[in-house]
Length: 275
Image (cartoon, rainbow, N blue to C red; front, side):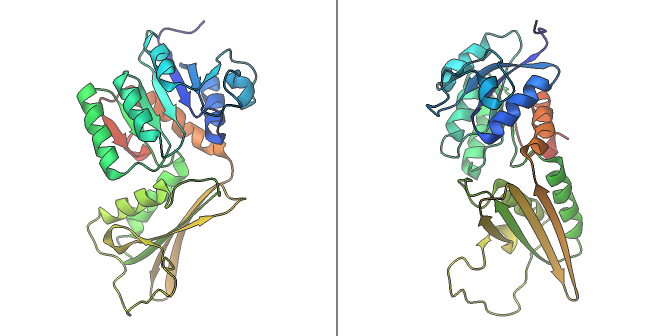
């Protein structure tokens, strides 16, 4: 029997690679239970979510209507949490819907624009509903970003390379954009020009984020999620790299976010804000 203090969890995008891992993690975690599973793939609608995820039956069918599942979550004695790993095209509306129903979103889907994040933050604050949007749920990535902030005090030249599987729909990755934003917030300019550059192929030098930080994106089968932050100065190169070899590495961060979001009254961007 589920404890009344247990957190009800809805997983949106449950049949995806990340969604399946989230389901397994939620079922194994103490103090939370699966109340709904959503996916738009017609091949899995009506199937038991646990069987689709490969962990055995959980007696929760996969539905293709997020709104109806959010209604189910509101009937629980404890305010629910929606975990969203879907697609950039629909994540904004998914998060707005969850907040409107009083279900706290934990979002790993990237692609939200700064304007959308600001709008969702204002909506969450008005509703006094916590939300966590995290470009990356890996604790190792958070440590890499913190190390980069320390390195940036001593290096004026930095570029970011991010590498992902070829099913990723957006570029650059949310993690790379967040890393560049964190470095830019230090308030120093980077990469002072030493020569006039000419791109013979558009995009050869990557995309330019705040404070002239370049981001380069690679998309290939065989990759999962990888990032390098390269700092250079005369006579030396300092490289920070994180490699994801299994999506299970994200799950401790997801479970932490599910617990932490219940304590919030507004939207927080970045897992490091709740560690």
